[in-house]
Image (cartoon, rainbow, N blue to C red; front, side):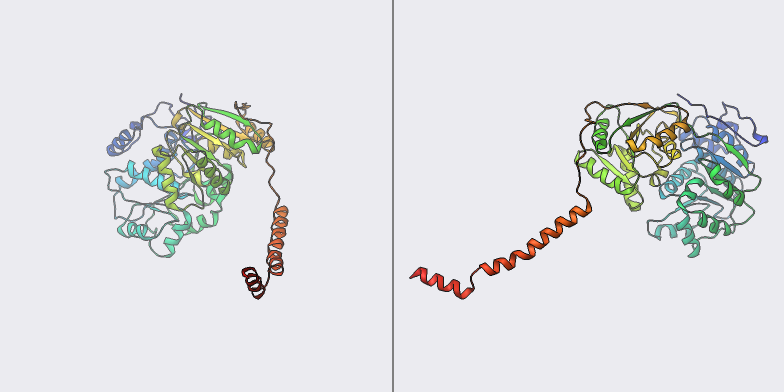
Length: 442
């Protein structure tokens, strides 16, 4: 079932958008049109319909759209059209800055697919890996650089890349970059760029990036293709549960029919690691992705999840920002998020491209206030359910406190220290033992 966006707000020159636009309505190169058809794109989404005409006209863009609405293609298509319509020396003419390695890889893959067969070179620049392959790509010459802020500043400082000829800057997931603390890095990057450029800034919400927008854009067309709402195609259920019963409930959920591809969110990386260990003990194929995992481990986890060799992927919010996997059947909030907006972002990973999806939230009594805040944003009461077979009244296993563990260790240490001395006193000396043995033989 296709969902209609909650609202579409544009500058006056784009005040109305035709609901049934086609990609052929845009002035895009036939090769781009062919690539769109090959990738299965049929009709533009609202954010694409709103953004592409303004971007093709060279306007700065200030866009708000939730994940899964086609935002990446909304800025990549005008960028690619600009490059092929005005060819020039191979040098960085477009810079796309994103908050995470996963998002850099996915935007890069999307750019390669959309630009297949076109004279456009793309390089992804991100941390967590060596410099070798990235240095080589930059030295060979690129048109589009897709980068995370930290590694990009490293490459600029190492003089591996310069942006004197830059024409377009895209800042994607601007709100998340500010949340992570990248604002100083973004400002340092912008100072390295020509002031005469086209800038496109995208965020899930516009309120959080107003100050940044004033700094980097000029006379921007404001495009708000979706408010903070969730698709009607996502069923949302809250499962009230004591903390100590969470894993039992999760196991029973995963055993239900239809739990084919499940993305589970935890609040911290330590809880993510512990949850994956418990899933493995329960013989459930699961992978984990968070900030402490190496780039190779993160890529391997995503690949396994995409292929279906691991039907469960456990993630933290920051690491999951770049996850764009089709066919996720369920999102499970093992931990309720700290902010209600993160709830909307999490569950948006299922029900992508207007498909049917399911969101399950395991809520402890201490989560009651956050659940109410989430319902206020959604403007609806979420359904509550219980899972058959879970003993909700079972007492929690009491774990010893740190002080009790310290006392126990100290008491055992004293016993161990005392034991050898006592044994030494009671045990006869070697000469006495020989005398006793000789008397016994006599």
